[in-house]
Amino acid sequence: MGTPRLFEPLAVGRLQLANRIVIAPMCQYSAVDGCMTDWHLIHLGQLSHSGAALLTIEATAVLPEGRITDGDVGLWDDATEAAMAAVLQGVRRWSAMPVAIQLAHAGRKASCALPWHGGRQVAPGQARGWQALAPSALPFNDHDHAPVAMTRKDIDGVTDAFAAAARRAARLGIDAVQVHAAHGYLLHQFLSPLSNRRSDEYGGSLENRMRFPLQVFDAVRDAFPAGRAVSVRVSATDWMPDGWDIEQAVAFAQALEARGCSAIHVSSGGLHPAQAIAAGPGYQVPLARAVKQAVAMPVVAVGMITGFDHAEAIVANGDADLIAIARGILYDPHWPWHAAAHLGASVAVPPQYLRSQPPQFPGLLAQGGGSAIA
Image (cartoon, rainbow, N blue to C red; front, side, top):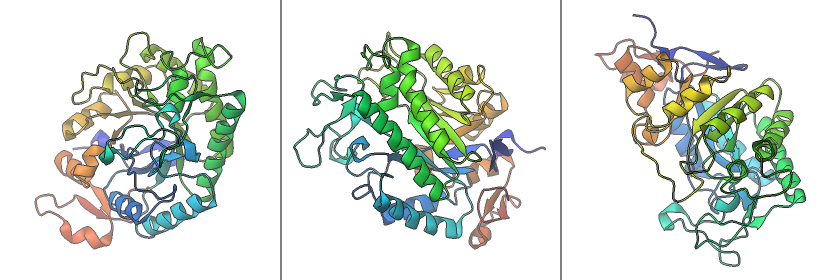
């Protein structure tokens, strides 16, 4: 039998991936003043030996006011950069898995309590609260404090902050950057007509609503070394009438590709609390398929992809080039090992783990420093 498609290598620009499994960014809400802690070393260190091809650092705020919560990781100054450098040093000492980072700004969904403390927005003036910014002064929830509509100066400032964070990521030796334009956060807010009611050049038509997200992408692409990948995560639909939809998402993907985007990660939702999602295994895969049919760059599918045969079929059928896992790999940190065992493939592991080779899968574990291709 040949190598399963899920375990075939793939090049994303110059980034060589050992297989088609990537770890999606997952917020841990465990930073202090934007600085990573030992929790991140434990969390990322564990996942760096999962057998996946790429580890993505959680949504990382480019400005303090761009955090979802005050526990979000940031990359906006020397202190946040130094804290991330220390964590990365620990991970890289023992793993060769490539590392990406998702750069983000929460927009009107900023200034919230930690999820396990209820997650509601914290108003400005309250402890751990601050004033949120957005394309228009429309709150996410009716009970939220309204955001302030961004001025042109604000737009330029956020653009510069994304570029500055990308330069810091480059200094840290991070292999790829993902620009977060999904899940109802700032760039998605500009894209959707439900949250963007501007009457200037950043609102109204699709071209105008795409202007700021494309401006941010261009700034990040210019700031990050040319040989390293820059991708975008997009919500392909708001799951709401008259909102952002797959046709607009395809146009956005094509505009990104024309600007040198290395890959696009297709998710959905997050913009409106009344969204109606019929969630189930692979429920977002049709969205990834529609984008893939319109672009040549690699497409990542995500969303309740937990079955090994299902993941293999998504790639083998050409619905997407890669699959991303998030909650599933928190539940099963060796999901790629188990997928490889099921499908008849192998994964590279550090020598410390070779003794765990299951007798029923004698070729499963191969010695290696991680999942990167040398």
